[in-house]
Amino acid sequence: MENVVRIAIQKSGRLQEGSLQLLKESGLSISNGKDQLKAHVRNFPVEILFLRDDDIPQYVEDKVADVGIVGENVFIEKGKKNTLIKRLDFAKCRLCLAIPRSEAYTGLQWFQNKNIATSYPTIVSQFLKKNNIVAGIHEISGSVEIAPGIGLADGICDIVSTGSTLLSNGLKEVETVLYSEAVMIATPELAQEKQNLLNKLLFRIEAVQKAKNNKYILLNCPNDAIEKITTVIPGMNSPTILPLKKEGWSSLHSVVDENDFWQKIDQLKSFGAQGILVIPIEKMIE
Ligand code: PRT
Ligand code: ZN
Image (cartoon, rainbow, N blue to C red; front, side, top):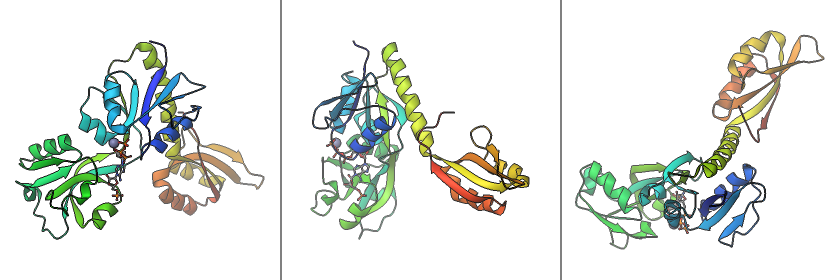
């Protein structure tokens, strides 16, 4: 087989934009072709296949595609012989059990001998079994949230993101069955040459992910604050210090984690930092 990695992504839907964006940020120049089944990449030996998300695990297992990007919920539900090789940090959601708002929820026992509508019968039955609950599972492929209202089921198990779909259908979330995000999956045995190409791509994806979680920070500070400031923002190795024209002052450059950013800014200010600039990073390689 020729030396190209075939990546299956969703043809249209909630995963498509994030998947394409990730590949583009990793430097792949993707010829348009959203409407086609395949897109070519000019500057990397990769071919992109556009498929329905539900079909991707099967195509990957059958080696029609080498890797795929799907929701973790679909990866687990389909139970194919694929491996999860990378969490991708987008399309975050949770698979939840929900019941009519008017019901008093008494804990998982509530579901004993009830009927649950869901598009995820495998995950739900495993969850119920683990918790010693016996319930009927009614598989439906869409609009699961209307099932209790039309008398098709007592409760549902569906993907929740903001919760507004549940709310507008008179339901309340009572249990989280699974947290999910977009993941990259692969066939377990890739030919060595393909694996090498995939490793190069994964390296790029990691650089993009790290960059997203970090910011470049520049500030001015009195020289006697440099030590204290360095303990707060040590950077990738050690900060860069450049003398300012103003006697006794320096410009300090470093990186800061997006998550504890605001807390650190307060500390830096209290140490005498001024003129703080925070700039996005495009790629980050340690
Ligand atoms: O056509 P195709 O089969 O490819 O797409 P699809 O319709 O099966 O999937 P799609 O595009 O809806 O979702 C793809 C993946 O996105 C899912 O498998 C999840 O991993 C992830 N994801 C993230 C979501 C949501 N957020 C989400 N909110 N998938 C579905 N929803 C739906 C949910 O089913 C419910 O109807 O949105 C509604 C709930 O949203 P809130 O914000 O009202 O809570
Ligand atoms: Zn689908």
